[in-house]
Image: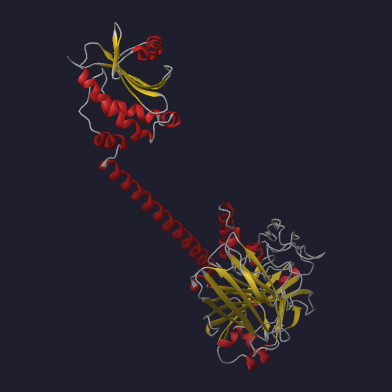
Length: 544
């Protein structure tokens, strides 16, 4: 006869089931009734392998702790097969649960049910199974699954490696783009009247107690609050005058305005070089909180003497190229100013500016009169255009001494791995002891957003973590304060990440010894009141 097992279970001597697995459709009430009748039947039975009722047969084996391993079968089942199944289950239970204690049985109840399913199939039929095959099946160990898991882990590891590489590439590209912005545009571009660090409260030889963002101490009254963001500065459009006549520099101004508008749309104003609002103040938020609009001219004539520097030096401070480009710009604010004749000290200029100097007047300027008398006026006695700057005289000078300040930067790996020690120093050109530089800002990339650890400093500094930049500031660099050094450490390993170093400053000391001797009217020779300014600014000044 075919064996049919109705239920396999582990129960107590009182008929309480700890684990029970039914292989045919049975109601809960019938199962509980069969378990409740089992202790009474066992108590009256004379033999210890099975006991029968009118409907079912109980095949059982006593376990430790007054527990029974019980099979409930039909009366027509093969008792020999029932006993073989019982012996196999008696080996499976301690192997799966670890012991036959009630606590172990409860803790491994689901594992025991799975083991019962390996021995008996749905419907109560015996499977051809051994203890080792049951162990293997319960482990559910699959070579295909292992290969799949290994493949997935390999893909995850590869994706994590790619992510790290991508992050590194993005950081390097950002730093390279930042360097390129500095090299192309330059923080101290054309027309910049200030180095932009007016907010610093004096230089000095000792490190500033509030020089960086990480300082816990408050700045003294009246000093610049480094943690306070700079307020946006109003844009100075300048006077708008419609006039006909000579047009100089108009295209450049339109280009500058267009670039400023594009930068404003893309929120890139801090990286746009040039203009009166450029420089370290925009880059680091270190300028004055507010800027007053340009006042209306109060004199008939405005004169501007301006020189722009383009300097490139190597990391040891040797000058690669240095060039000065200067111009005399005249702006007639009234008709009286338009009739001006400007006299300069041409004999002195010709005597001192010989080798490596070149001069040129505007094509509409009377060149013969300038060369003979040093007077600047338009040909044919024409008047200058009103309300429009006119460059009337230009000069250039190219030589090593055209660099007023040199930078020596030495980044070195400290040998411990992951930390770079940087020593940087500046020195004023000894050939120009009369040179006075103000608002000197030396800006260098760090290659990381981590703050630097300042070891020693002359002057002050500020760290911009968003851009990974360090700005080293001096209020004045002159013959009495002609050198300075800064030493710091920063996490990293790439010594090339600290270049190019950018230098920004302002000065009223020109290389050209030009002087305005007089400004007179072409009509009656009377003196014309005028406002004059002098400025020496770096257009591109870098250490690469």
